[in-house]
Length: 449
Image 1: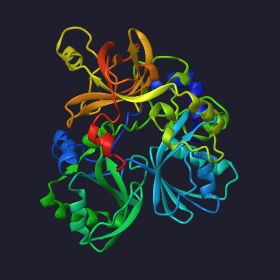
Image 2: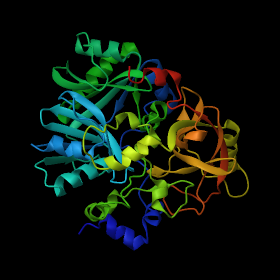
Image 3: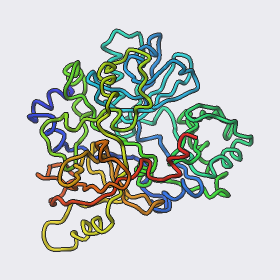
Image 4: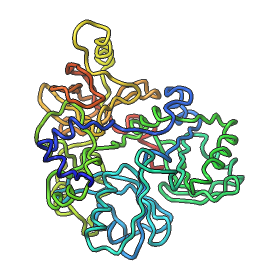
């Protein structure tokens, strides 16, 4: 019998203890780590064109049936008033108290047929409500390559960079039609129908291409052959895992599933293996101190009060005066170097800062201070070659979120947890400067163009 999350929490003595000492890896991208080196691969989506393989690390939940749209409308904070087939959106869900469950990309493939793609947190939440809420829907779930037996149902490739359009026109042999952001179009590549989502990463033009798995190698080979003259660079998991830092997307905030209305039933339904792991200097035993709202991550633009959804009443109150704002924190170079130098000095070193991504739990939550007082949390940290900066994405109290504000990130755990990615270390404080999110001006001005 599969252990439920509820049982695992009881056995551990609480959700924070369970998550802090979880033996799961932080995040695994089951694709080649580097094709050349992650620095050159990061540069490719800014300078030429990058090909990223998304086929293996995400979960697909295919949703169909007469009540599919009704279910999504009930669970999602987004507006579905004009969500026709051939479009996609960043699907966002909250619990009844307005705290974030998670987000994923929702594709409206055909009339009454949807594909919800991303990390499992929000996918699990949607499936739970569909199975327990009396909806006439069908689910087909295709987990990532870590948990799946056999091949994926779909290949999924990402083409990003200033040369992406020219490459697409060469490999398809036709002009690329004008397609709005997050709208879909169909192409023919190597004799196969390829579906495409007009996407963008770090402000660059991009296409997310997908189709039946058995056609994926042929399509990929054709893209690589056509891409040689455009400087196509294959991107591995190291560089890909850091791409969110340029677009300012927080990939895995801790889901607000441990307290609140109807979450008892959900934790009894959810397998314990779906719990994830918690890392960082935030050490509160109150799990709600790790929650965020959509407004903390600047998702307020996606919240639509044009329909009844789980958490609407709570979000209406939160929207009147959002407490936090998403920012980029640019870490002080001297302090980063000092933390790394401690690995070569006597005594207990600082927590190792990995490059290009420094996250050591699925949910990374670090304290952010100003003049010694807590003013927010830092979510995800890493190095951006294109800016030559080490940064983190953070949710900061609005009064302290102005660009140029000096803050401090507390790095490392105290006490040190038992997670596999954590070695004996000491906490250190790293100075940081508040900057906009996205940090790159080009990304800020061009992401949704």
